[in-house]
Length: 105
Length: 118
Image 1 (cartoon, rainbow over the protein chains, first blue to last red):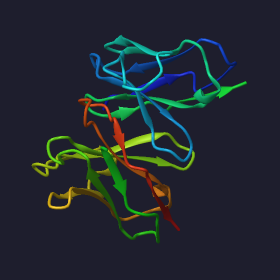
Image 2: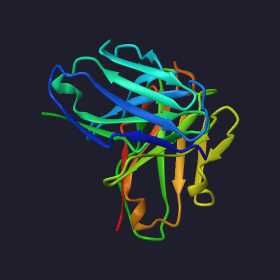
Image 3: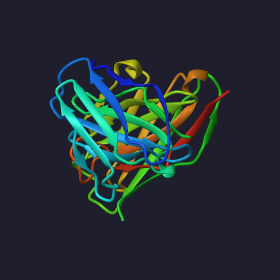
Image 4: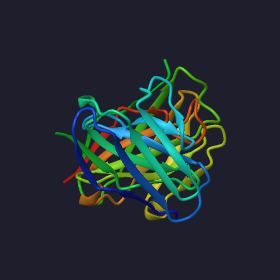
């Protein structure tokens, strides 16, 4: 099984800050990685697929990078609506990271 | 519009089974796999398995092997996930999801079904 490890587990930042989340895969997955935003009471929302492709309708302040085993999700200028838990997801054999909870100060 | 609509909340006793449905609309229910993901209380997202509607072919996470069954009814474009031998740790929100316009990633999600085991 491919294990996905996200860091940090939680993060607190202010509106306008630039924040970066990291996701590491236990085996190489090429660019078969997605990022989701998950808010309580709602289904997860796809932000990024194929490591760096922005899903239609997602604001351009979200960006993804990386390949093989190291990936990052960056929010260039944090907005109050970005408070959520963010998950990475590998779709070689399917598994999720444990999530990073983002709090807006 | 493309959507997945799931069945309502369930309350089950330990040892029982639960069957959750996921009805697809707005696209051709066929070659795009339907996946099931759950979030137990206070936990993260957990992939349970997948089913290809055209063939009925399935693949399950090792953790759920022998306890989960994913099926479909192509006449109604509905996928089903049945989990048996329920225990308290199975209390969770269960989601169906699919990659309709994006291969591999999940761009369409059901609204979630809460299953409480008590």
